[in-house]
Amino acid sequence: MVGGIDEVEAPFESDLPEEGKLLTSSGECPHGTFVMKHLCSTCQNNADALAFSKERNARGKRFHTNKNSVIFGSPNFSTQGNLCVSSFAKIVTCTVNTGHCVTLGNRCKSEHSVQNGHLYFNDIEC
Image (cartoon, rainbow, N blue to C red; front, side, top):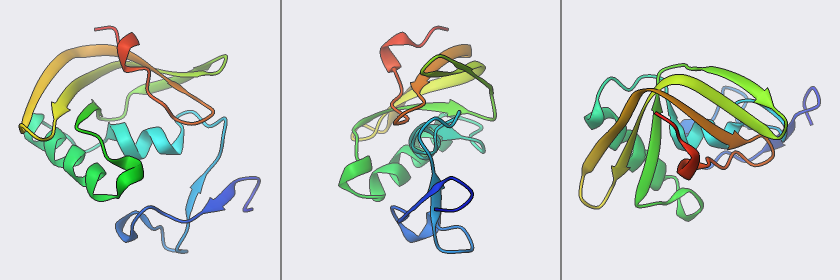
């Protein structure tokens, strides 16, 4: 444990910080798992989002999905109970096996669990 945050093995080498560990903690907003799966701070377009989704799948079975919601940039996050809420973000959904991404909107609100990072994709509002 480092500073009250549990150390866990990173899912693959390119995610490793300098010390060789990925830090995550239940109750964080945004949650580390959500960040790894859905938040693309460098995405500029749908091609970037598709590449991000393919990278997610390359991390292994635990992270693999055919359909991925990708939040662009660095939206504002706030904690509301057991939820971490982001607002005013561009969100696209990519289907990896077809290589197709659809923009849901440019000023969307999303919610994910502060306990495990699960994105409630059915509750995205744009």
